[in-house]
Image 1 (cartoon, rainbow over the protein chains, first blue to last red):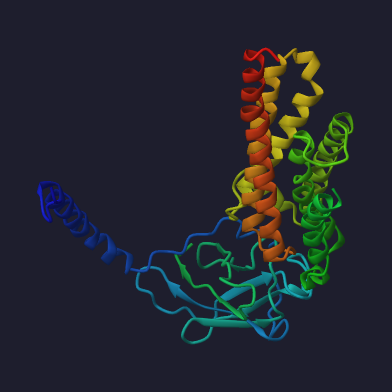
Image 2: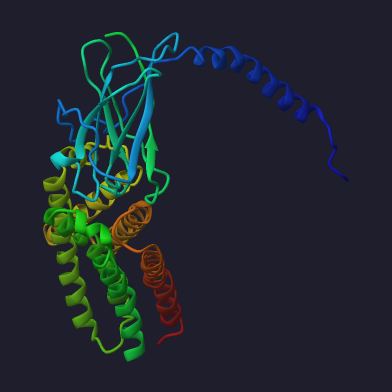
Amino acid sequence: MTAPFYNRRSFLITAGLAGAGALQWPIGALAQAYQPTQTMRGGANNYRPGAPLVDKLGNGFFVRGKVLRAGDGAPLRNVRIQIWAATTLGGEREPRNHGSVLTGEGGQFELEMEQIVPNFGQPHAHLAYDDADFKTVFLRPVMPSASDTSVTADFVLAPA
Amino acid sequence: MPLAWGAVLAVMIVPVVLAAFNPWLAYRNAAYIVGGFAGILCLSLMLLQPLLAAGYLPGLSPVAATRWHRRIGTLLVAFVAVHVGGLYLTSPMDTVDVLLLRAPTPFSVHGFLAMWGIVITALLVVLRRRLGLPPGLWRWLHNALALGVVVTTCIHAARIEGAMGAASKAVLLAAVLMATLAALLDLRLLRPIVLKRRARQGF
């Protein structure tokens, strides 16, 4: 006996998946409406509040991202983002690995620093928004590869 | 005999030496390096434990093998303490997160399980007489804990991007897993069957 190409069970599975897909549609559309970024686990570890504004902390590695307003997604300029990571200068508690940058017109920011190296088993950076206007957010993006020379993390901030 | 010892020692020592030449060590403080290598040495020593328990290492009497199994077990407990302590000194928040099961790293839960597996194993060894566990039950408990510790340690180590080289780490992990499984099957399954069969035949 050969297996039927199409039977009641496969119909039910297909219909069920289609129904689930239809339910997903409005949820997917809502997600487009710029939900606030959630703080990541361990994101605040080794945070030193008030990292000084710097032009750069070193050479060759870039931490980049953009900062948007929750809801309408408008870019936020002149927002302070604090950044720290374990690099070739030392660990996450090394003061030379801590710095702040301000976002530009399009809400984008970039900090050049020394090469990030794996710390506690993963190559990763830490970023913080921790000022008065919006709710505090700590991010901890992990680099896909330890030899990457940049890492990106975006913020969508909700009013405080 | 020298061939078996040479192979075992090579699988144990080469990964440690390669890790010692990892350039990332230059960017770490002493506590991090010591803590990290305590972990690597634990993994390396774990290869010896099943080989000693099952008597696979040539030239060692059963008494000597048991004595070394106990000594290395004590070392494992000490190195786990140095591993956790060194990481705590390096980054208290990251280490406390692991101990409270809220760390972001997926491998940290396996390190947590391996640590508690080793602590419970050590407690059972120390309290073995006082608890009055029957030898059969104690053996199964000890072996189940050993298997759990080895598997969780291997997952923990495999997923960490650290000082160890990928290839030498993979070989060491495979060796530790195979030695553990072989010793457990041999001690708890094959040898009892052979003994029963011999008893039935009147040896």
